[in-house]
Amino acid sequence: MKKEILLVAFGLSAWLAISGFAYSVEILFENLFILTNFDNKFKFWFSDILFNISNILPFYFFLKLIKPNFDYLKWIKFFIILYIITQIFQYLFTFFVGAYIAENYFESWVNQTDFYMKYSFGMILKPIITYIRLIIIGFLFYWFYKKQSN
Image (cartoon, rainbow, N blue to C red; front, side):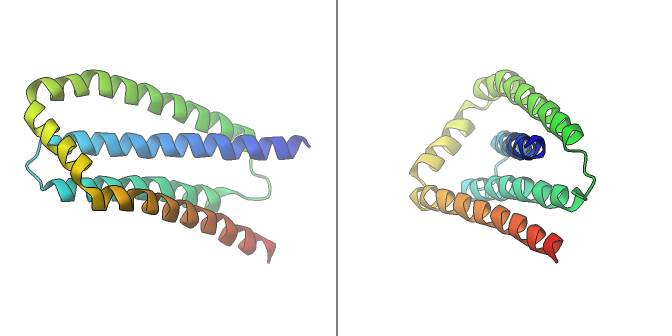
């Protein structure tokens, strides 16, 4: 029973840490794009692609690390620390950089936000892409499981 609890804790901590990391990458680039004159569609899709890549790739690499004598407790601690760091980063980034952008690039921020709210095609596709990302992550787990079974 102890190993099963470690597996659940490992999965939850990995999911929270990796999702928090991916979201940090997304907000970083979304705010950087406000400072540029890129097309709003490009900004929308590029930040979404970055989020998905920075969400899927870490799962792939961590699944490759898991071996028979894998130290789950060490990695749970790592993921908890990573999650705390990303949450602090997101808070500080939003507090300081968000305030700076709102103060100095307000028009660009409003234009991007208005575009996102009116871009119904992208807003319809975004949840579909989320499900596709979850299916890909599920497939990775299944693929690694099948590979270990053989």
